[in-house]
Length: 183
Image 1 (cartoon, helix red, strand yellow):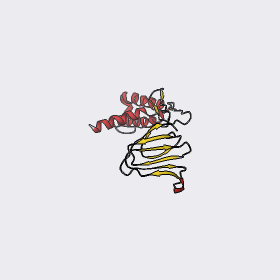
Image 2 (cartoon, one colour):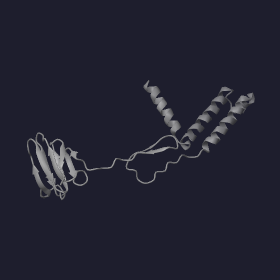
Image 3 (spheres, one colour):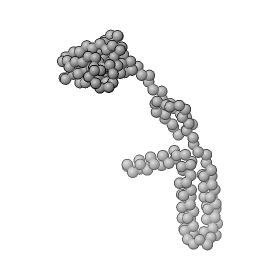
Image 4 (cartoon, one colour):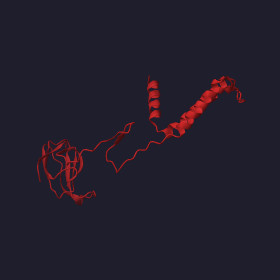
């Protein structure tokens, strides 16, 4: 059954290609069809394949199909501007653009480094804590000890006030922080 699904998927992807991609493949298939008809009706190259009447018609028809296939117009996709979200193109003239949700600094967050003003708003946050909880208020992103404004390794419930002048807040193993009041 997997083979049939793979065969169907390949067939579907082939027909979804532009005519510039399908044209050479169809031309080769037409050539093979003409060769097979020639071989089945006698097999030599003296022109006997056309002598029974049907071979000539099939050969002419195959040449017409190949000529039309190679003259097909290409499919063009135009994207205007840089899209921050994925653009989904369906095999029709319809284009669907998904707009990203606006980024709003959250009122809850977990472990990691949160940039003040981008990832989180300044204010007072609370967590129930966790085993080996550690947090830092940071004045910069260089990683030096001089950039640590305040830090703690508490047990149990923790309340921290993050100032608007803080660059970031770092938290490890503290669980979820919830904003309880503004700056």
